[in-house]
Length: 220
Ligand code: PRP
Image (tube, rainbow, N blue to C red; front, side):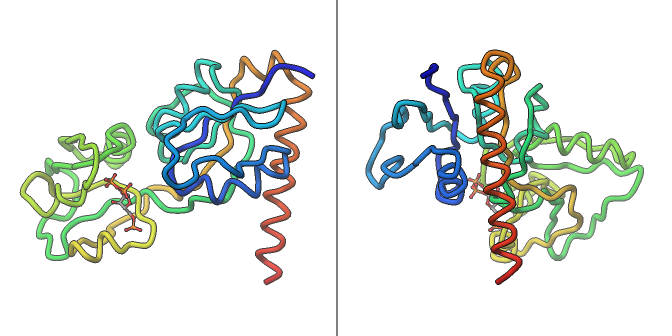
């Protein structure tokens, strides 16, 4: 038996969707993050350890090699641009990175105007508008970004949209999709060097589980 392999998993609802996929690699999340449980660090069987971290911290734990594996959204990966292996799109946690603005917005994004953009994703937003040659002032926020547009703080927001309900209930409309988002399996390059075969076997088991789920889904 080798050392325990560590997974950094995002606290929250992704765990529920990830559980059946990880189970195929022999990692059972039964008993992890049950209601009222405040534990952050779990030893699972003889082989695994699970750390429950804030979603935006997953790349940090994996990047420093503290965790061998992580599960993290493409939104976070694009924002942080860390050097991680990203072998499997888990096809869960689907949403999209969007530009949105008030339904009655008078200012549309056109070249030459300085737009104020509120966002939890300043790097993504900066790259997006720069690519279009639009000058912006990026205003970083930590949450409830929609309020940026409801007040005079910003003309537009860059944020993830899942059901669209938050936009609808706050009278905002999507202007543009920047990229689709889903959760990815990420792997520490250092771990791959250290435990190549074990890590590869786990990646393959997870990849097969994702393909099997996709087949099940499309045959329904
Ligand atoms: C996210 C996102 C939107 C909302 C989109 O916020 O920033 O506000 O979910 O989901 P919807 O399209 O299904 O309505 P989150 O719930 O993470 O809260 P936060 O704004 O406080 O970060």
